[in-house]
Length: 461
Image (cartoon, rainbow, N blue to C red; front, side, top):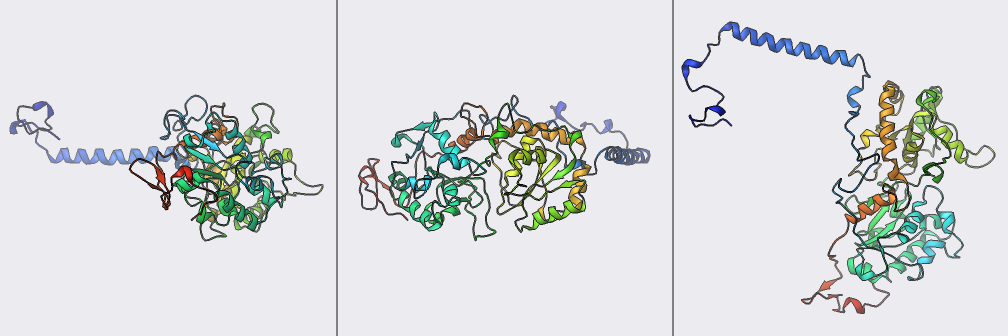
């Protein structure tokens, strides 16, 4: 605001002397109006000339210079509120330490192997466990741990007939009742992996026992089949799906990306219909526009079964890879797209994506309403100039390392991203409905028994 002190003339907007004012005549007013009108029409003319040279959707494209990443890849430290360094301690429960834990890992007969479970889109349950066992942030002392990891390959065990749903539920309850530190915090500092679309619903009683625990899952919504989602954005962590190791290797990969000019299709959808509206619409659309949209019928058994290499050869042959919702909202195809270097088009409205503190997904992908799947979608994709596609692919190339479950020594990986996310969950103190504390700092239960003397099995809420 201008000063009201007459001596401070340098900050005045108007002269204090009446005789210094210039008379505003009608000529001045007309000239000013003409200047405003002329500026308006020149601006409109300039905007029109730009729109004629680019796509009608040009305002939806990101500024190529907007995305910034340190060095050549995305970084966590110092960005997104993560802090400058990792300093957490994680205790990993041993399979022989807790009765029942082996059942959740290998089934009732102990015949299901980790090697069998590490394959496929649910392999994260094994990979995260293995990486934590080798981690420099692992501690073998419970009393100094910030977090506690409970290993389980329960999705794989269930799929291979190792445990029934009832057995899974009973075993989890038995396991949790033998963990004093779980009781101490009410489960707030315990970490569980549920790697599939079912999320924590694999444990039927999750809402009773794990409603305060940290859940690692690729799935952010499962309300289509259940009344509530097991994912809570304030305590849980979305993790990337498990992309085939043959595509994430540093050197020799199953297939290499094709130049845009050599790609046969505008877009593709590689997946089964599963009776889902969005998928059925894409399959229908591919029949109407076979030269633009590829959607082959996938065979998962028999002589016509599509192998790993053939699958990725199809996926790389389009500029855009369409990723609709299936049984649940998350889709592995979204992550696979980055390794064949097609732009992923997310057609799953409730999908949650990992590491949103540091990744701007509007720079590297497209999300389109699943209610508008049709020719409008194809027309929109066809209108996007190749230079924008190349730019999105280049930016995706710089961040795709965070989809890879590589060793902790790698500066950019899914595992390091998970560690950074876990660090944000660390608390100095845990308050639980069943724990109490006294003047000397000792923690006791409802019967005033000190924590060091708690006996298992313990009652659970």
